[in-house]
Image (cartoon, rainbow, N blue to C red; front, top):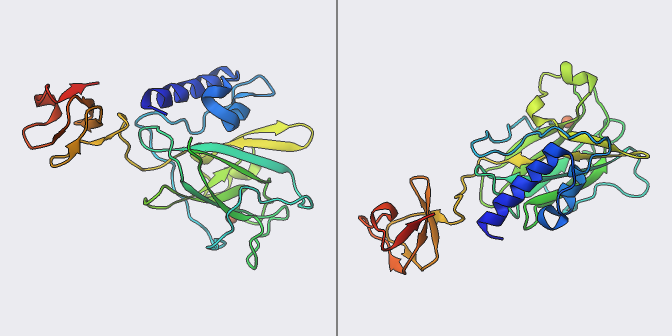
Length: 261
Ligand SMILES: [Fe+2]
């Protein structure tokens, strides 16, 4: 997918949210379609929207119940699992709002009674975003336990980047008002799926620099081929002829080598 398609895809996704209508499947795929189709006809709130320049998703304490080495799986439920079925979908973006593939998401949460499995791995699992930067988690609405509002824990890590540890919250929970850890920026969009299930959406924004041009930052000493894309001082450029970059041949001052996008 080229840069133009990525951006138009994001624009369509946001437009679908705003209008509360389904966007073309070919552009946004399954999870986003589910989010764009709102049973009530009301557009869900964008939480948080990814706009260029937006702050990254805030971090939160991991609390006392994280366990490493969770199984790789997108579903934390079995046919006999008790609790309201919940599907959480979303995307992981970088700072330029481009989706990031192969991002590790490690989820853990309480069961329907508010208890964590500290012996085994019930309600613990990790997965990776797909090529479109999307993830889907099948779980239940976690139960409450003393001192906290309803939440899901997650660690999010783009390949080779630092780990973001945070928590996701549910709207309209009475304890959101009294939980000192609660952060409204981490509220999911949640809707009922009759007769008994729920769907939630949340998009992460990681503190990962991205090059809007789809290439890399121009660097002296690099061999560029015709058609290569770079950014220089925040502007995108396309390489017109192959060369090895040198100081003095910066894209703005080498129009024979680089065309501004
Ligand atoms: Fe917790």
